[in-house]
Image 1 (spheres, rainbow, N blue to C red):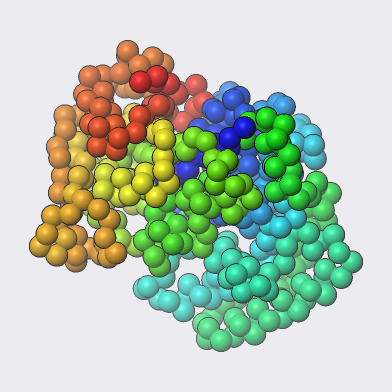
Image 2 (spheres, protein in one colour):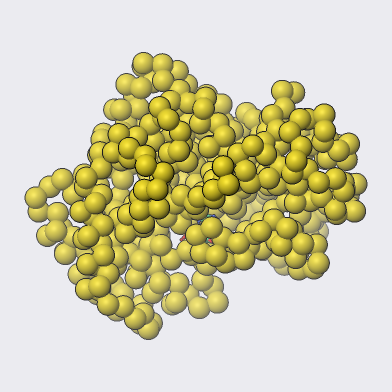
Length: 425
Ligand code: IMP
């Protein structure tokens, strides 16, 4: 049985958590393949709003296994907080959540290194969530990291100490003022590890291989978005993992030949949090309205997100890199009330008109070229059928489908599980 993928196509925060939750009823296994607690996947149902950071978004469903794959980086302290927040749901976590032994651990000193690195960059800072993501992946590729499986070894604290000591001396090299009490951070860390080791650790690539052989349906859940991919994103203002389709193969041990549907999620407009270029960014009342109506604040850091028109050049690029087979459009409801809508269909790039994403999309190189479309006034949030959607929205959708050459199968009209319209075309 093929493994389906679900990925963000913009700069993250597209609404992956909601859609995974909606689609979980069709799957036996939900598996996260990259990123870590920098992610904030928001789910709303039965009047409850829940934010997950590392735990897969299928966790609230019965008879579904949730896997944290080898490509994920885990901070035991944040993981423990996530587990604590789930306690009221009375889930049998030990039997529905499995963690790859090959997933890497975020140490308290990784977070400190992240802070030191960002502080040393001054104005050029990445705008990291400061969860230690970059330094942890650096240790992974530098072959120095600690993995979940290490916690099953007797001498793991020795390994921890030696790595943490090395990090402390590295913090010194940055020559910036980072205040910390390592003893306090480590007390929290060791207490959280005690809880983590009570969970089930597995060789997840083997588990997933057997599951595929048994015909189980698997959905691989991405985090962040394609434009934050370490290779294909807007480098260096990216995260430190492969957020694109290829990341699901390396982050779970899934063979490329086993990939089935690639579900790409995008917002009907664009947002970005943190630094980095954003050609269609708005600094006017329209951008302010998108942010306010769309409640565009980071689920992990609370930072307000930058907002702008839909960038079809960037979206096409993401569809191409990922081999997207079906699209889900989120937050069309936020655009209700705009008289005119703009979609960026090409860039003026160094005097030329281009329709692909070039190497350098800094402001001084790019002027977006827009197509203007009619807006709609209707409140979409109570709609549940395609037939109810306003004509202008259908024209917007038709235009995108034609340009992207991929069908839009889901139109989300609000944050709740129930505010989801399925299209067959
Ligand atoms: P880091 O991965 O926390 O180091 O952050 C690197 C960049 O990716 C920053 O611009 C962050 O704001 C952005 N980023 C990281 N995770 C997310 C996410 O889940 N949603 C949106 N942006 C993110």
